[in-house]
Image (cartoon, rainbow, N blue to C red):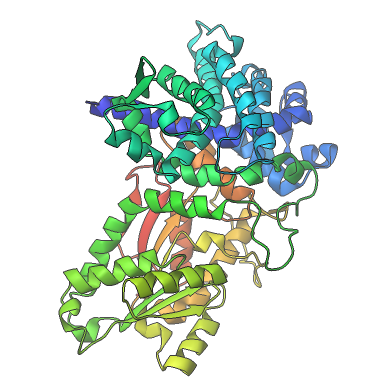
Length: 537
């Protein structure tokens, strides 16, 4: 049985794995192009100088270097001229000297893109086997007696380990294999894979990590293995962006549009969306429990104080809307009077495949709802369609959404707030071009103001993702997934700002966060997720 202290240690391993999935290919690309050596030789550099010297895409170079700051390998500051400057830290030279160790996993990442994205294939497995063998020998490293150096060595080794356990864990988790293993007292490789010899080598490595106990060719879970198996979905979102990290060198130094030049109507190529949705679903259950509390309170009020229904913008596969309806139906006073006061449900999404999935989810659950196309940046269109076709006012509904506002399509702010001095430390880009933090705040302000007329009465119930100051992240390695969030969102043109910045801009938009319903996760300075009911005063 794992103790609380044991779980903290294992959770730290998981967070370091997430760091590694994004740091390894990015740092190796920077080393390969000479950026890291340049910073060492010049004892620091500004973003503008590095951009010009290496003919880089400034926005994505900024994302990449800020990631290294979050790992404690560089310092980040805005100098007196307003330029972003990266400085050396005591461990910078030592850390950069280890970056070549990422070559194998970077090659594995590139090679695996040519094969089935969710199966163990022979060619990439042979390279994986080589990596596992080197890892068992600490990649030739003699662990330093100096605490600071040993910390970095173990950090890098965990990054390499992430490419063995991360994708493997996701494949086994999505396929339901971990559940099958758990149901058996013990199992053999040949019972579960067409290539048992190769698969046995993976299981042997996981046994080397302490996930399984092996005896006479049979395997059974340890408590440590069960810990990671039950959290397989925690790897899902970061692993789903591996197609993007295969192109990270091109994004930084080449074609900034490499991910977006696809024929209209073609599937996106920067992310494995099915895997992303699977990973998101597993990770979000904690937040949904808090959402339930808000929904129950709102729909237990006198009927004249309740919204007429719920509109979910970015409804995905409809699971969240289905869940909210069931909470209202089964756990509120409104649920007892649905015949007299039916709940008007709206599922809206920009993606036609998502709309199709939502319809299927709600039909299967026998839930009546309107499923319509919508754009998070154009609430006026949704309001017009609801009024014209269904006779319902958008402002009479409770608007809800999860992890969507930061994923709005970028548009330059129409008005730049005079004297605005951004409090964000984020790195933001659109198609490789750097976007100033002041512009991001003004863009968020204009975005929320578009929604103000429709949500100021009953509110906007939102779960949002946030970045952290890289100096804070660096002091808490193994305690947060902030580096992974910054990387996956930064390179895919999404705009996660710090929690306090988000709250500040919402207030400017006339939508302060209701303190009664506010929550943050974790409930300390490392909060990267928040729940708000934003509504007029």
